[in-house]
Amino acid sequence: MKKIWWKSAVIYQIYPRSFRDSNGDGIGDLEGIIEKLDYLAELGVDVIWLGPIYQSPNDDNGYDISDYYQVHPEFGTMETFDRLLEGLHQRGMKLLMDLVVNHTSDEHAWFEASRQDTSNPHRDFYFWRKGKNGGPPNNWRSFFGGSAWEHDPTTDEYYLHIFSKKQPDLNWENPTVRQQVYQIIRFWLDKGVDGFRMDVIPLISKRLDFADAHLPTFNDVVNQVYSNGPRVHEFIQEMYREVLQHYDIMTVGEGPGISKTVGLDYVGEDRRELNMIFHLDHMFLGYGPDGRFDPVPYGLAEIKQIINDWDKAMGDQGWISVFMDNHDFPRMISRFGNDQQFRTESAKLLAMMILTLRGTPCIYQGSEIGMTNIQLQDIHECRDVETHNFYREYTAKGMDEATFIELANRYGRDNARTPMQWDQSPNAGFGAGEPWIKVNPNYTDINVASEINRTDGIFRFYQQLLHLRKNLPVLVYGSYGELPQDNPSLFVYQRQDESHTCFVALNFSDQVATFQLPVPTDSLQVVLGNYPDAGLSNLRPWEARLYQV
Image (cartoon, rainbow, N blue to C red; front, side, top):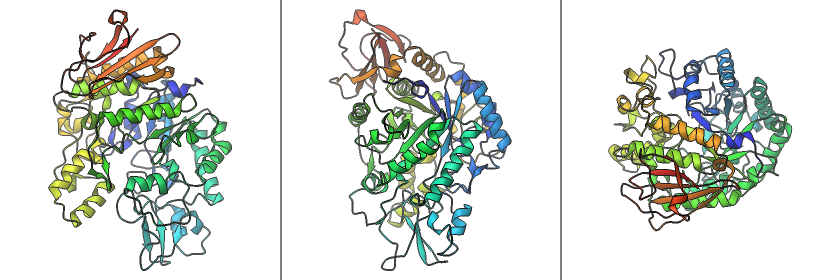
């Protein structure tokens, strides 16, 4: 397998609005991140993925961009950005920007020109269509609920928006659009950024017949209609050829709709497209026909199957990023662990899994101290456009507010967006002003200041794992294979290369569990465990152990 820096790196995702507010306006900013660079260096991560900081009306918290060349004033200035980049590079860390080019804001100059009249030169920057039978051009639904088409009275036509109506989709069929995107990419790379996380990149090529989608679930629509369009690889290869290949950078494609059967088409070493993808198969587990607020049951068996299938699909030719939460999903400890009685143990167990599977790990801010989902009381405390849209849709169908809020508290995106919990002072040390979104009240117990002083805490466990990963190449490049167990709550696997064999044993339950390894116990050494006295016998509740032969 080809060895390269971005395979052995560990990513840490910062959601800028919620990381640290330096000026008391309630919104996290670049100066706040600069204040915490030594903290990130102490943790031991290599790459910072920074959520969008561009000029934006913030309909979808910055994923609706009105000017790709400007830093939003609430985050700071371009001078502040330059200092942040320099500070990261001085500490040996790299910066990954968020590249959002499937859509712009409806307040971008291109769209404002596009909607003026049908003959405007920018009209073809977006998808405009006549309505059909008194309604939209087709039955496509938005990710955020409702139709994916918005009527514009100026020209009596509809424009396509697969996300919010304030996020019109760009027309990549237009070569001028593509050149404009490449110019944006060059601008940031020439500043010295080290790569991009590319938002919903498999959606950039549309099926231009715009046929109605008659499929049983929204997930099927995403997989079969919105993603992997006819020219997607042509477009990404052109982007690589014209821009990306000329820089030593890291490219990560967010992959809604990228299944294991087409994954290598995006990241195969011979494809000249992307370095790796964030596939979302495990993150969409539990989504019913109508998506995240329509839950269906699933278990550890499905998670393991997805991990195994993707590892096999990638082989030696492809690469993925390994993660269990981010700004679009609930906190991993609340979703996949036990965030009450075994919060510390399950936080460490999930850390061990992310940092010992094959792929580039991505840690979401706050996971390293065990942050959990928040319990919002009513819809007015929600800040996410998706949650508000579905609230209107579900309550219109008869669901009461309390039932919907219960769903939002389990599955909504606001869970991961509450302010970073730095200490026990007001607002969790996030900033002096009232935060843009409510702080989780458990910050008095869960915060960096208290966690960092615990030698057996979650933060130090992450540190140890990050150190081990740097010093045990088998955890990066070694082969992976699950070792099936009789107990369905266990996940046991092997990492192996020519000189090392490691085993990872994880107990995803509140009960003691018996497990088997294929070697004599006297040949094993415990490298790390999340209980102080990790041994070779049964696994206790939410116990995680890393062994080396």
